[in-house]
Amino acid sequence: MGVASNMPLVINGERIEDDEIAREAQSLQRSFEQMPPEIRETRGLDAEQFERNLWDWSKENVIERVLLSQEADKDTEPVPPEEIDEVLEEIKKRHGGSQQFSLSRDENEIRQDIETRVRLDRLIGEVTKNVKPPRNKELADFYRKNKNDFAVPEQVRAAHIVKNVDDKTDEATAREAIRKAEEEIERGVPFEEVADRHSDCPGNGGDLGYFTRGQMVDEFDEVVFNMEPGSRSTVFRTPFGFHIAKLHDKKHAQMRNLQEAGDDIREELLRRKRTKAVEDFVDRLKSRAAIQEIVTAEATNFAIK
Image 1 (tube, one colour):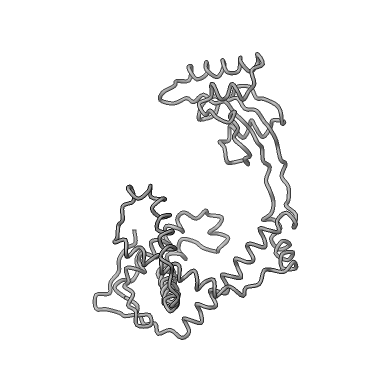
Image 2 (spheres, helix red, strand yellow):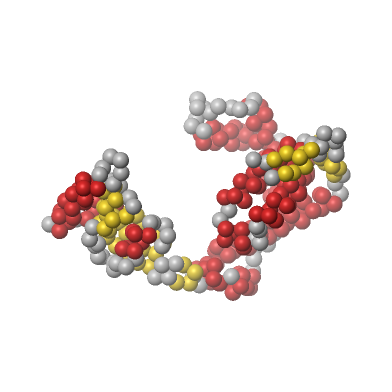
């Protein structure tokens, strides 16, 4: 993907090298590649359009991030050291604790980044503090316009006993093992007890919880979605091996009403209002900012992998 390089920015006197924009472009590209096709379609994006606009979008993201950071740095209220310590400890925990935590940069630099993040959070909080929660009419209007989004597909709650067929267990061995498990159930041993003793996926009586079509392999769905609550299947085969399933419960497809969906809608509308408040604030910062793109003699093209 060809994009212009060696074209740094100067934002209110702060020089931003083009490799920062390149990193943002790489991040956006990864996000785009991981985005489900239906989400791309909803957002009106295709690969050609994305490639055509990637560098400009990345540059805008960097500009907005720098402007917010510059504004946050004007905050003169000290950040308590214990607040920074708490965040740093959380980071270390996510990386396996202090001994396993390998710092790629000097710890003082990381603490500075944390302080900047705290100041930025303060700024966002200040910008959005007057955003009012959506009114009931807004909730109702959103529900009416997006009613299909609140459809709840059919769900089942099933348990299973599985004997896998793999490089450790051949077909005949797995079939014999599942047959013995089935015989125990037919003698009156509780399904859950048999599952915990014999299944290759033991624990919790083999309970898989609630799931919708498509979360399991087709062969499994075909059996359990055609069962009635309380019933048990015979032995059946999937790509994983041999199974016996028990259906605990079935919830038919339904539509969530406004009352049921109200909290989710309220949260989404409030998120959108806060996002809009921040976008308007950034637009005001941008309108009075001095932003210059420097075209150097070394400007060339390079490929984002």
